[in-house]
Length: 206
Image (tube, rainbow, N blue to C red; front, side, top):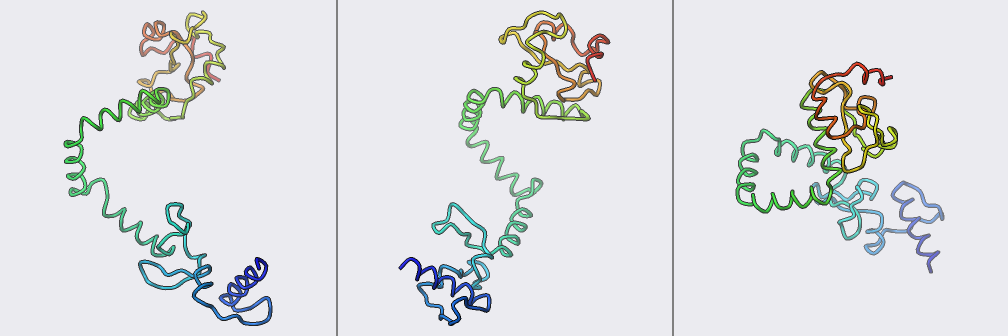
């Protein structure tokens, strides 16, 4: 039974393409047509399933719009929801004013649950605002392991609670936010250094 049903489906697919592997043309019936054809919700044209994107949220796993209509819809939607659109901006401001306390609480909960990711994202944002020539996504654990938990300023052991990341060439002096320009230091050593570029520390750069 399974083989015969698969053979019928193969005949229907081949008939759409213009040939039949079994040699006999099997007419499309409503019960089998839905497995190989689909009607677009926007242009109302029946097309093969290959012209539709997959969609996990849909019941049958396929998008309601064909690929061409989906492309046009996305372009139109993006044009309507531009950042500088005054209507959209006014609606966002009204929504934020109405739900300000709830949004701040949600943001605080996320920052508390994802503290390392939030700190890394803020450091990249700060580097971008300082117009750093290179801005990389930094994983502090890689730097801690690379420097062997030794402060690169006082050359003493660093505990995790006192660990800090320092730019060899500060961002205020157009330094990079990259692995080659970031080292492990104590929080106290970092604050004492300030935004100065120390020649002894610059020798570490490759």
